[in-house]
Image 1: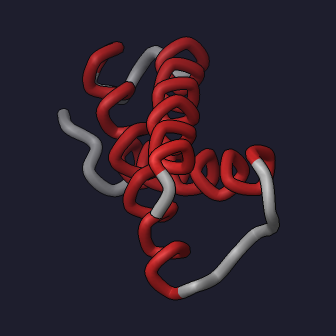
Image 2 (image 1 turned 120 degrees about the vertical axis):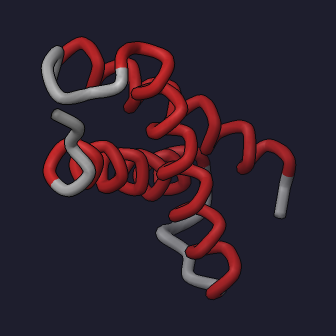
Length: 85
């Protein structure tokens, strides 16, 4: 795994978490919690793709796309499945 790829996963996860916090004020864990969930989803899905040898393409955009999708999956799951009262 390249260091640059990992850093892009972190940045995209932060952006996804921040956007989720801005757009969906209710049902989250606040700014920090949403940022962390975005990072976790981004890194986990990016790592799974990397470990399986699946590539969305070469370059920053495909890597960012996969990381963003992972972050969104975790954020949506948190709001729908693990929602706290």
